[in-house]
Image 1 (tube, rainbow, N blue to C red):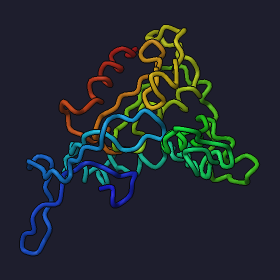
Image 2: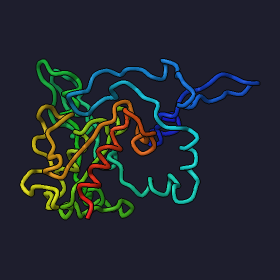
Image 3: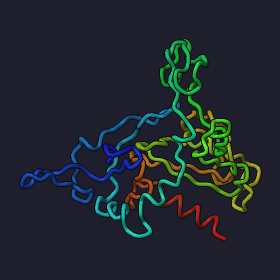
Image 4: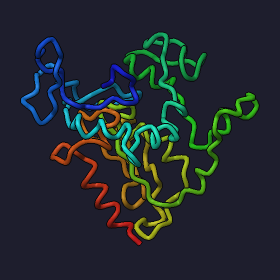
Length: 254
């Protein structure tokens, strides 16, 4: 469904055969699916911004997803659009030359790249993100239409996040700007001393060392999942949402 718009990208099967001049749809329960819709996009990245990676999966039932656009309290647009996506508060950088150039997108004009660096590494040096406090987006710019989110420093409860390797946030490193903008976790399930983000560059920027349960900041990746799949996918061995979320809720139940 990514051809409609990136924010509704969902893995819902594949086009089926033509029947009486009409194109049918092959739902994920009507396998096997053609190999053309299940490409392998390669190993996990180590740098930011992260590309699409991993073995693609088709995990969302088309028939179930359709109701989410119009049925009662499950209306997709009602709960999606009030949210502020990562694209609002971050930008993937671009460097003019991996061997040594300047940032053309992101931290524009800043030096980037260097001897032996890949284009992805050089681009990552230009990427920028701001914290949940988005005052800088509107104050002084006359943009009253942009919401100011200024309470990040008061968030002291455990946080859990889920990303898909085919989505918009594809690796745990994409959540680091948020993790570093919020208060240290003071809930009983946290140890009170571990940072939300322990080391943003180890073992690498794409998969940094996060605080986990002790620090109250967990990020889980579902390989091959598209943007919306993390909330629409069926239960199964590829779904890395259900288990961690259940454990999180049990651990933090009051």
